[in-house]
Amino acid sequence: MKKLVFFSLIVVALCSFKFYDEPNPLLGKWEWKKVYKKGPMAIMLLFRNNGTYDGFANQKSFVTGTYRLKKDTLYISDPICNSKYEGTYKMTMYGAQDSVRFDVIADTCKGRVEGANATVYKKIKAVK
Amino acid sequence: MRKFYCLLVLCAFVIIGAQFAFTKPEPKNAVELGKLLFSDPILSGTRKISCASCHKEEFAFADTSAVSLGVHNRKGIRNTPSSMNLSMQASFFWDGRASTLEKQALIPIANPIEMDLPIAIAVKRLQLNTFYRKAFQNVFHEMPNQNNLASALAEFQRTLETTDSPFDDWRMNDNEDAVSASAKRGFILFNGKGNCVQCHFGPDFNNVEFRTIGLYDGKKLLDSGRAGITKKPADLGKFKIGPLRNIALTAPYMHNGMFKTLREVINYYNDPEKIVPNPVTRDSLLSKPLNLTETEKDDLENFLRTLTDKRFAAKRQ
Image (tube, rainbow over all chains, first blue to last red; front, side):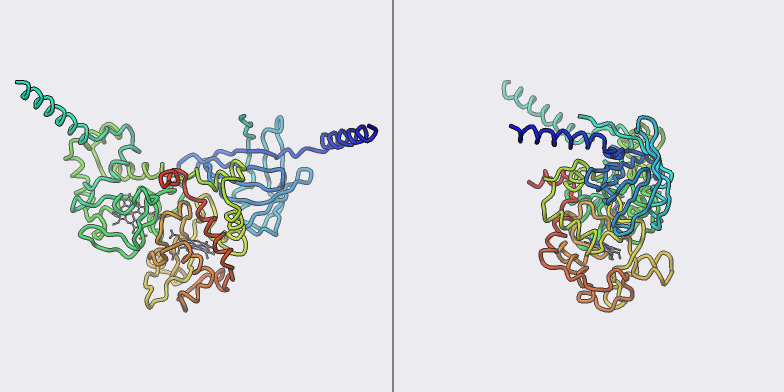
């Protein structure tokens, strides 16, 4: 019995620790709508819990890479640029953390800077 | 008398039936009109060839032979690419000589070895055709002309997008069962050891560049590709990077259709010098053999197979 109480305490402690641990505000799907070749283009980003992300253009996956956050700095890498190099972007959250803007701090990957710098994404609400 | 009635009813059925069979549904918009035009041989000199003769729907709108046959069985020198997944492409044809789908659309019609019909005559034919005259009036509010003809064909092709492949299901929905473990390893090879992603990236797995993988040697392989358009020596042997969506359906491969299977393609990339020695140029990414094991080749191939639109997978079962 004592053991059980002890265990429960640990579980509760772990859970609450998780609660107070700063949650990752990027988790989930984000969308940026623009115009490309005269047609509508929706860029979607999906940030996962395991540190990977995907980018989609009009529903088609176009990049798979890894990321990590340190306060408001996003460290991001992908195999198109170089999976061992991390570009850094300043992340600014707006509203109820439902919009996010990325501004380049340092990134040698030209294509990524063109695609990501000064972009604003809106959170896609999970539809269940 | 009874017999006469029976005959009459039968006749009526045949006539009504025939009418149904021969009246095309009236197109409501440019896409539907483009779809009809795409498979209508009215756009060829012999009235026997349509876009769909070479761009066959069941093969993701590509062809199964190395080069396709145009009017009078005339042969070109290049492999017919898929006309799907074009809406985000920056240029068209293996040498990128057309910058928009509208500009591209009229070229095969006038090409003497493809459809061999001068555009002015094609437009005249459509204007004299009661069905098309009415259809163009309904959709574009004007008579058929070369601009709205090009526009209809382009709009139809823009709808042929592949967003529902097992690969997208895996990435978009985190559906781990959508692709096999081998295909997942193949994706890692594609992004890593294979170097494929350095050229094949973006929503259709080709970026906007022209590169040379070494299939121009000036002896047996004579198509110089992009250089024919730009006249720049630096572009010798460069071609549009092949988009990879539905690639499992669009064999044979490369601008000249020289590889019959995906395995042949992978074997080429594994050691290009062994298959085409001494090309005029070859990208430095392909300067060393990849040393892929047989399992790794399987994995890479299985990954490429996950890029097939589910609508084709369903039909094949």
